[in-house]
Length: 238
Image (cartoon, rainbow, N blue to C red; front, side, top):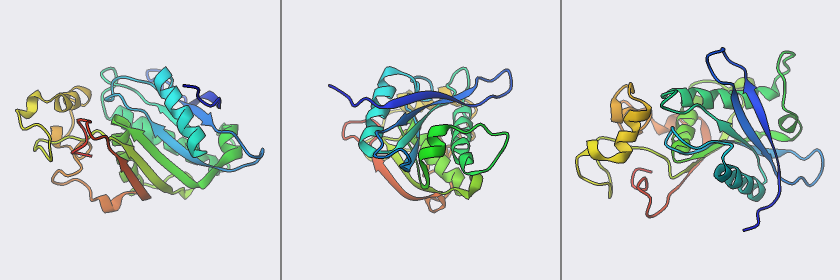
């Protein structure tokens, strides 16, 4: 399969304390129709169960490159920290910080080093977030956070894309297996990546239907689309 050749570059977003890795991302720029063209911007979070994969892996690079080309969006693919070296909520914090970094380009800050692709081509009236699997879970929780916390420049998220998002819970739904939940791989993975999760498998972070979970009416985006795969183990919950 021949994929469209598109411009990409690696960007360091935030230099943090010495004991934390630099937050970084890969930017994908589609073909422009003119040099000053403004594009929708998509902040994307890769999948991998919070413990594998990378914004710089061959699979994710190829997928996001195609996504950028087909959608005509400037995509910022975030390299968040992974468990077990960095258990959750590290990935959630990195993902929120990356979105704030993107939105900070609307501000006039002398100490802030702006990315030229974002400065020249991002349309901040068309900001989207998205992700697949664990990244879909991240996008969901980032959207909820955006409903209660303001982004730099009061930028608003227009929409969120959740592709077979990773959710779970103690009570099976739909066609989820009815066997002992503690033997379920999806369940065990959550305890591995977030062993101290408040509420365990019924933390609102992994189970949006749990008692006490924030209302979906509080999502900080105007639109949301959830994409599911018929045979995927995450279909019923999504």
